[in-house]
Every structure is written in C-alpha cells, then in structure tokens.
Length: 442
Ligand code: SF4
Image (cartoon, rainbow, N blue to C red; front, top):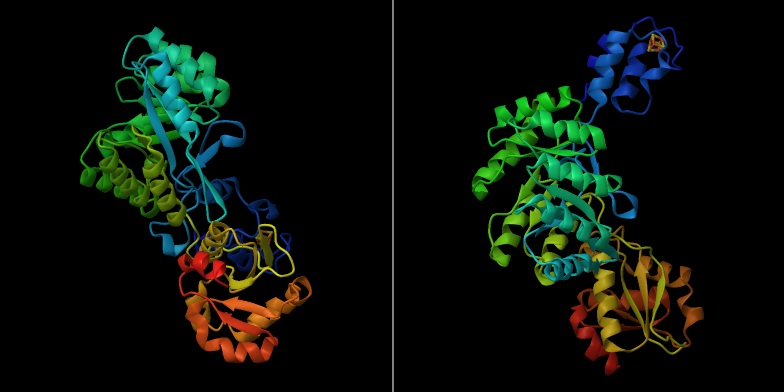
C-alpha cells in the first residue's frame, strides 16, 4: 500500500544533508509520496528502508500482460475501489471460448466471427482481446485446435487445459505469443507452475475459497510463477460479485499481496442475452478478464460500450480537437453546423450529417468536452466562445454565405450570437436525429 509522506520520512536518514536536492528530508519524503522523485536520489538510504519503500511503490494489483505485438494488452495495476476516486486504468479484456470438440470448419467460422468484432464508437476503436481454446477431448484434438486458432488470429490466447502434457505441447507452438495458461490449483500447482516458469507465460490460479487461493498464489510465487491471474471457479452471479469485491478490497485496503492480481471470470449462462448481462456485471465489478461462449456482434458491442464508459476517466470527458471539420464533398456554399467538442455530441452530429448525404461543415467549439446543454449551463458554450471559434477556424473565409446553424437547445442565444459573430443564425433541430430532414429542406 502507498505510504504517506510522514511514513516515508520515518524511514529516511533525517540528516538534512541536501544531497537529494531538497532542503530537508521531510521535503524529499513529501515528493516521494507524490511519486515525483525516485528513492535513488538519497545516497544515504539504508537497504532496509529501500526495500520497504520499493515494496510500497509496487501497484497493489499486479500488472499482467498477455499477448505480443500490436494486439497485446495489460490488465491489473488498479488503485481504487470506486471509479470516481481516480479512474480505472486497464480495461477488462473480453474473450471467447472455442472448444476443441468443434470441427475444423466450425472453429474457423467462430474464429472469423471473433476476429471481426471491431467497432468504432465516438472516435475510438473498440475491440475484443482474447480467444480461449478449451480442451474437452484428447491431447491431439486440443493441439489441432490450438494450431488452428493460433494461426488464424492476432488476438491474445488462453490455453484451457488441466493436462500438463497438452499444455507443454501447446506452448511449443504458441509460447512466443505469450498466452495465458488456465489453470493451476492446489493439487497441480507444482506441475503447472513449472510450465509457466519454463515458457515465461502468465498463469491462472484457481481455488474457490479465498484463503486457499492466497495459499496457492504464495505457493506459485515460491515456485517461480509470479505473473498470476485469479479465479474462484464456477459460482452464482452474487457469489462471484462477492469474490471479486473481496479480492479487490483485500488487495487495496488490506495490502494483501497474495490476492493482489487481476481476476478472470468465465460466464455460466448459455443464453446470449443472459451471458452478456453476466459479463457486464463482471466488467462493472472489477473483472480483469471476461470469457464468454457467444459472440453475437450486436450484444458484444453493448458490452464493449459499457467497458468504454467504465474505463473513461470520469474527470476528463472524451473530447475531440476543436476545429472546423468538412464532411463530404463540401463547397463554399455548404452549410455550417456548430456543436461542442464532447466526442459523443460531435460524432452523433457527424453520423446524422453523413446520413443526410448533404456535404456540410461542423464547427466543434472547445467546451472542455461538455455536451451542448451542460456547456451552455457552465458558460462554456456562449455567443462569445462560438464567435471566437468561428473566427479562429476561418469559417467566414471558408464559406461564401454568412450563416451558421446552432443546436435547437440553445436557440435562446441566437440574438446575442448574431450580434457578436455578425452572422445570420439558423436554429437547427434540438436532437441530432432531426438533422437529415433539416439539412435536406434547408
Ligand atoms: S539525501 Fe537523503 S538524508 Fe540527505 S536530505 Fe535528502 S533525504 Fe535527507
């Protein structure tokens, strides 16, 4: 757990020698607490104090990386229980299980469907992260499925097998992709940890009871497996939420290093709708990885949208660069619409302008990422601000007409805006959905 400035001060030599560049040890301690300096700056620090300070600066939930290349991703390294306290850092990895009992064509078909799960929303790419190959039959069938999946995707891999021989053979093929091994338990820890250590890959530790799980992670650490992901096995939804919450609390509030790892969850339901609800609950409450069976694009998009929202910094709304955006084959006669630089506002307007097939310009005003009404109420979307943007982005030089269209919700500012901008103000629809018919009839 992070130490306070005073806690750190107690560990320093207290000589005020200034070799660290600070006037006093206390000043240095305060900066260490804020993580703006390194402990290396103090040459007089004892090894014992150094060890304590290094241990306290480790993240309470270990950062685990799975995969290689551009599609690799990391989970863990979270510092808070509640998003509003700071932010959640590493989004839950979403993956899909492919059982080796499927035929070759079925595996290829499901894999192609998983690979195509990429969406763009408010200017960000939303994608899935993992394919898990699950052994349900003999070793040969598992290896064949691993070969097919490994050769057919850039996504991260999970190797789900209790058979050490099968895992060894699968890692001969896939180790360079740094897959996650699922799973070690207290009964096979020695055997499976050797494999994880040999191939330097992360490993899932599974025990249903949290005390047994703590013992297992300590045991695995002693055997050289330190990149761990936790699982508490198949349980009801409330039981899983309890486990996920307790593990997060133990890691953050009790500094329980044995449970300081991200958690993997595997959905229970076979119904695609229930499964997505279950997965959404796990994403909301601390899962580092969620594995599902079904991969219907419409349902997965809802899941990825939820994840995008949960992992957005609550203090920094998603925003785009404020500027003049041309949409379609614009000319100097094209209409000019004004909106804010809140991503959702801009991309909603953009989608409707594109749907209208009327080429147009969009002025995105810097409202610090606030939506139209919020920005208006906060005095960030005022006649003066809009006029500044219109002038700064060269609207009057870009189009020959002297008109701009403002959102219907801020119709009340049209008189003042006309005065400050010197332009004719046209009041557009309140909702972006009204833009296509509005633009066609303009
Ligand atoms: S170098 Fe170390 S002992 Fe000297 S003032 Fe800085 S913190 Fe204190």
